[in-house]
Image 1 (cartoon, rainbow, N blue to C red):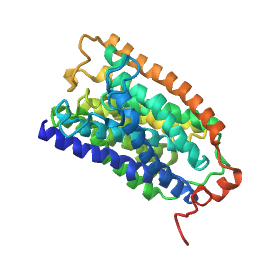
Image 2: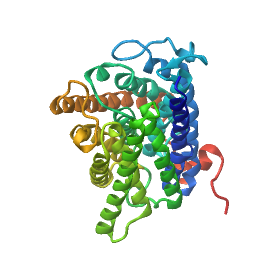
Image 3: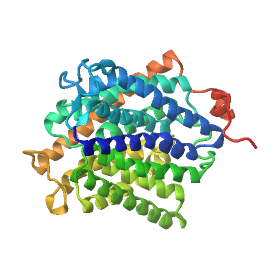
Image 4: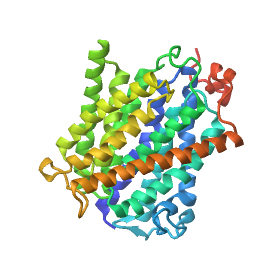
Length: 402
């Protein structure tokens, strides 16, 4: 065991959990109407709890133990065989399992943004369990657990494919099947608490250092560079959204700026261990622009109520970073170069295969999960519940007492 590596990943684990609780919860909570704030907070914390138990039971074992090219084995179910002396690399295996658990928590929590203000609470729980087992865990094994994409040489340092593409695509599928909120798009109220959105985004920004720099799984030069490029990409994309809104509407909004922040963070995630500082700025610039266009396309052009832009920000950002890292990995730009034996064309092909197959798998599996959930527990709240607000109709509480 290396004490420095262990100390850093202990810190990173706390930072990544901070991203969901309370970062993502506040970010999403501020974006909805006040009568649905508690339901969003409930979704995030309940997902954190149930995802932890799924990871403990079978998720970690199926993702990270030896099996075949598609799924791992059962040697670590219920985390059996992990004690205080068990190591993975230079880390206690208990710490590595816990660090990866925080990723398994935030990934399905990201999808909350697709179905806020209109979904049954039981459906959220059932979708989370099935989605972790059928989408997230297999893709983790493919990319990080020695599966077929890892063998092809795919580069996904911290989860462009594993986290952002899976969550973004599945969020869109859920939103389409669920249908739009009452009054979408013309009669919906604006975010009830932009200040809360900013606080949540700020916690996400800080927590993302554990997400990306922690994915070095060591306290080393790679972690340091990942932290730097993560920050630069977030800062760049924030300014991109500010400028676009100023040009387009005459006034830059706080919600727009911090949405750009998240777009920059999502875009740099897969590339954070590969590119240098200039690459971080370029990815923030490109990701900021493309994610902004994607938000407009999904909501305004296609009229899909993918409520809080999970596909447009996370899916598009993650896919963009996964593919463009090939062009920015040059050592002349401060990068690490490509995977061993790869040329630009061969690495680009592998990245495209990884993104494309994950899109298809996530979509097909999520369609099956959602329709099964609809049959078993139901999917959408009633019209009366939606009008009253999910806080009181589902949980018997209200966020504010006037």
